[in-house]
Each structure stands twice: as C-alpha cells, then as structure tokens.
Amino acid sequence: MTEGIIILLGCFNDEKGNLIPMATARADKAFEVWQKHKDFLILPTGGFGYFNKTAKPHGDYYKEYLMKKGMPEGSFLPTILSHNTITDATLSYELVKKLEPKKLFLVSSWAHLPRASLIFRKVYRQPIHLIGSKTLGLIKYPAKGILNELVGAFKVLVGIIKIPK
Image (cartoon, rainbow, N blue to C red; front, side, top):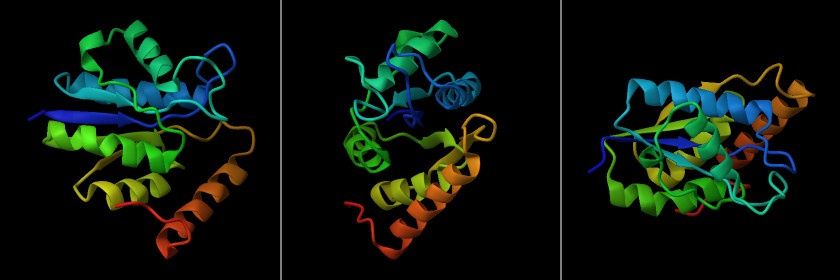
C-alpha cells in the first residue's frame, strides 16, 4: 500500500520540450503538495499528440522540471502515455489500483478540474482530492478556454462523451 499519489495532468510543451506557463503552474502546484507529503509519489501524465510533438513524452518534461526544483527521481511513477484527459484516467487506473494509495490527489488547472474530476471519478470510483493551479493570465483567450472546459464537462455529464469504466 502506498501512502499517496499525486496525479499531475498533462498540458502542453513547445517543439523544444519547454513546458508552457500553464504546465509549469500545474507542476509547481504538484510540487507544493509534494512538499507537504514527501512520502507521496508523483504520477505525470502525457505522451504524444497535438500538445507535444517532440520525441519524448510530455510527462517526462514534468519530471525533468520537478527534479530541477529538488524532487528526487525516486518520487516518480512511470509517465502515463496518454493523449487526453480520458486516457489520463483510464491508463493510470490500473497502476494506481495496484499501488492502493491511502490518498489520491489530482492536480490540474482550476478551469480544467470540473471536467477532469467528472472523468476521474467515473473511472476511479474513490475519493480524489482536487488541486487547482492558476489558469487566468496564462492563456491567450481565457474565456474561450473556460467555455470549452464547461462544454466538455456538460458532454461528460449528459453522456455525449462516454467514459470507459
């Protein structure tokens, strides 16, 4: 049994592997939580797709970033090679289930959390503590981004987007 896991949801990086400000805000929030719970493990998500066109998984850039901040390599679980929030949840589930964490934290941008929490709660069916990082001021069109997240959450709620169980 593991004391706890902090699931760090993927975001974007540029063509050189640099995390965008919203991604570093998520990573900084995960680091803040980890500093209070140093026996917890970090589970970075993000493989390849429109958000990462490099040869290295997006979650590995999170790991590099957090290690530069002082997090030891042994604090990380393997990167989940997901390509969206649904696969973040479905692909991470089996690993998390095997580790049986006493506590589970989900870190994402606060605007993304409503949709992410709906998806993760359908897949995991266990208590998940939600931790939001800064969103406003980090994206070019915040109203559009927030509206897209709300529409996505609505689609999950009414069943337009199906979540595997």
